[in-house]
Structures are given as structure tokens and as C-alpha cells.
Length: 177
Length: 345
Length: 100
Image 1 (cartoon, helix red, strand yellow):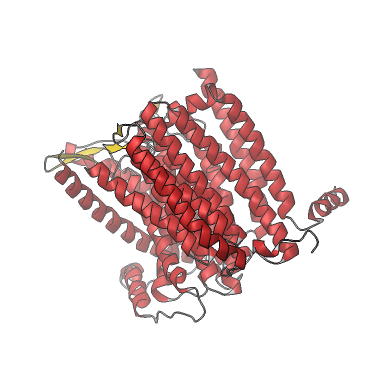
Image 2 (cartoon, helix red, strand yellow):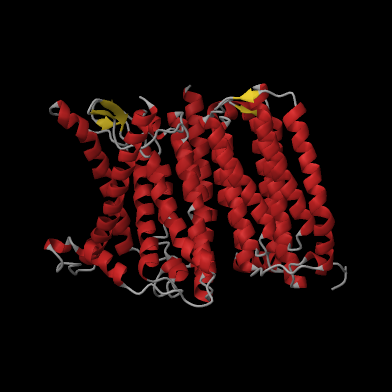
């Protein structure tokens, strides 16, 4: 019973945050609703027993990626969104379409999915076991994602720097060194 | 223990912990003013009460009576919410910090912490990551160029040093084998050869301790890394446009962060509440708390001593230090600790 | 004891909101945030099914999805900054010509 109550409360917060992201016109409000969504998702993961995933969700997703989004919104001084003709057409056809589609999917999932109940903390995921899996069974994807992150770092530094800045800094190093 | 009992005990613990934390914040301010005063060869507060001990009370009254103005053209919801966010996250991290062993009060056997989560360290790191929002949103919503620049700089600094902070703690985790703060302290019990305590700082994590120290100074925006809020720099950085109670909330959040960081350092590197135990059983129950408090006091004194002594870094020096020196050093510390533990096993 | 389909419905709602946001929003940063919302919905699905089938690899895969999302948002935001520098607008409907 308590499980259902906690799940519903945080599920409602999640869904409300997601809808708020769509409704708000200023991107900073959307970003903060997304942080709320991620926080409540972390609670849902805890209810399923995935404690390490919940902690990583808060630290990485809500605490680093969304901070990056908020930075960019602050830096570029993003203002309120203006509605163009294309967006009005998309809203007219898109929103009813998505609503019908999601109601259909929800009906199928609730009635005929053939899945059972899950208890609180159904599959405990302590960091030790997840670490073991990461470094034994999933070692190749782990190494590949680390290379991916390295490439992303280099790409982001080059793309976001001022044009010619990277060449400038290497030239100044040559002059000093 | 039944659900009702559990809730009652938790509420009592929360009230006591918040009360102690807020008092500690107030008296850390007093300690800082006295110590920095003496370093600068002057007295510090002496007039309000003996040794100026009632100065925090006078400051509190001043903050309550100041005019709480709302400048025009600020982004109102975030302007009002940002100090609350900063303070909420600064106060929440006390909930997983243990200060002593299990005690039995009125027949209830309970640990001296609000809750013992088996990912306690990750919870503290997560809350620290979320604390960046208070600073960033305050800087942006104040609609002033000094605040925006100060907020951007402060949050970029906090995010950069979070990495070195986290990595310096992984060495401790490898030695202890668990994320739970209580388990990490329990792994530091006992002594080497009878008199050197088995603290992590003596178990080879001295480099990690210094990395943690420097990253903590940068995380809490304290000298020598306090460029974003120094008075001679960007006016006052992200809290330029704040007055009275909202400014007091930022102030309290900064000192509460300092205390949280000091608690973490004590738990992870200085052995937590372990210390010589003696005397009757009643004393033996309270003595761990006393040792914990002494170690936190020493750490805070170090914080304040550094503040009175060192000049501050320029922003590019600060970022270069964090990314080009501290991060590789933290990674090297992690690799060496992991190697030693793997070879020993 | 909550039926697993409730978690899946929540994940579906998040994904649907993400798709809707991607289609109707015109600010490029909000479009990126809708992508993150879709990824979060999928993560919830992974963890829910991991709990059902008692396979921890579901949780490990969530970890990889998060890492990929982090890398993608870093590069994507860098691209947004680069586009903003030249076009000076964040509205995707105005970035519709190859020549400035």
C-alpha cells in the first residue's frame, strides 16, 4: 500500500514535470522541470531497488548534465520562445496524435502486457555487484564508452571555443616554450 | 522497531541535528571572525557578550530587521527560490552523516545519525552536485551583469572541482570496500603497533587528503578560491543583488557546506569518532561524539587559518589548477591505491 | 506490490512527452531537453524490466545510456553555441538556409 502511494506521488510529480516542460515557454523553466523529473525518477529507481543507478542519476544527470543545460541557457541568454507557423501546425496535429498513441500503448500495457507485480526493492543493485558486471561481463562496452566520452570532450572543446582559439593557444605555447 | 516509533525517533533526530547544525553555523561565523581577527593582529568581535559570543545573535537580529527588497526586473520565482535551494541542499547532507556509535536511549537502540544509507557517500556527493543550482540560478535571476558573471564563474568552479573531490574519495572507498559512511569509519578502528590510529590518512591516503582539502576549499568558494564572491572583485558575485534574509540564507548555506565538508573529511580520512575511550559506560557513549567534534573543529580551524593567510587565485589560474594539476593527481592516486590493494590481496 | 505495467506506463508517458516536445518546440535547447526526457523514459523501462526478469544487466545498460546521453549533450550544446555565434538565433525555424 505504501509502495503504491509513494510510486503514485512520485509518478505524478514526474508526469507533471514532463508536461510542464512542454507547456513552459521560457527554456529555464523547462530545464528546471526536467531536473524535477530526474529527481523523481531517481526515487522510482530506489523503489525498484536500483540504488546505484539512482545515485548516478542524481549525480550525473541532474547534477552535471542539467547544470550544463542551465549554463548554456544562461550564457546564450535564451529568451521566451516565439510560436511560428510550423510549430502551430505541429501542435494542432501532433498533440492529439501523441495523446491517442499513448492512450493506446497504455491500454495495451495495462491490460495485456503479461507482466506481474514488483515488490519494493525488487532487484537490489549494490555498487559492488554492478561494478563486477561492468568490469567483467561488460568490459568491452565500458572501454568503448570511455573512448566515446574522450572524443566528446575533445569535440566539445573544439566546437565551443572561439574560432582560431585552438590554433592561437598552440602558437602561444610554441612562442613561450 | 515499529513504524510509528521509527517516525518519532527520526523526527526527534532531525530536529536535534538541524538545531545543532544551525548553531554550529552561527558559531563558525563567530570563530572565523575571531581567528581571522587575531591573525590580522586585531581582536575581532568583543563587545556583544563575553568574548563577543553573542555576536551571531546580534547578526541574526540585524538580518531579520533589514529591508528585504526585491529589485525590479529580476526573474522573481527563481530570485526568491535560489537562496532556498542553496540552503536546503546545504542542510540536507547532514542526514547521512554519522557522529557516533549506536546508543540506547529510553530503551530505544538507535544509531547516532538520521539514517544509514548503504550509498551514503554517493548521497552526499549528489547533494553537493545539486547545490550548484542555487548559485547558478541566483546569478542568472538577478538580472545584473556582475551577478551573471559571478554566478557563471562560481558554478563552473564548483562543477570542475567536484570531479577531483569525488576522485580523491575513491581511494578511501577502495580501502573500505563500501559506500556506507558508517562502514568506512568502522574500517578505521584500531591502531597500528598500539599507538598510531588506523585512520585512512595514515593508511596511505595523505595525498588524497590534500586533494580533498583543496577541492573542498574550491567547492565551498573559500579563500584561496573565492574569486566569485570576493568583495574587491565582481562586487559580490552571485549574491550582489540579495539583501537581508535571502543573503543570510546564502551565508548560512556557505558555512553549512563548510561544516558538511569538514564532517566528510573527518569520517573518511581522520577516523570519524574513533579515539581513546575511558571512564564509566555513560562517558564511553558520549566520548566518540566529543572526538568527532574535536576533529571537525580542527578542520574548520584549518579552513579559517588558510583564509587569513593566503591570497586568492585568479580565475584562469584557479581553473588550470583544478583541471591540469588536481585531476591528474587524483587519478594517479586512485591508480596507485588500486594497484596496492590489488597486489596485497 | 505495484504492477510492473504501471512503471511501463509512466515510462511511456515520459517518452510521449519527449516526442511531443521534440516536434512542437522551436527553441533548440528545449528540443535537446526533450531528447533527454526520452532517454530518461527509456532508462525507467530498462530498470523496470531488470527488476522483473532479475537481470542486473538492465541496470548496467542504464549506466551506458547515461554516459552516452552525457557525451551527446556535451557535444550537442557545443554545436548549439557554435550555431548561435553565427546565426544569432536559437529558433530552429530560422536556421533553414545553408547560407547565412
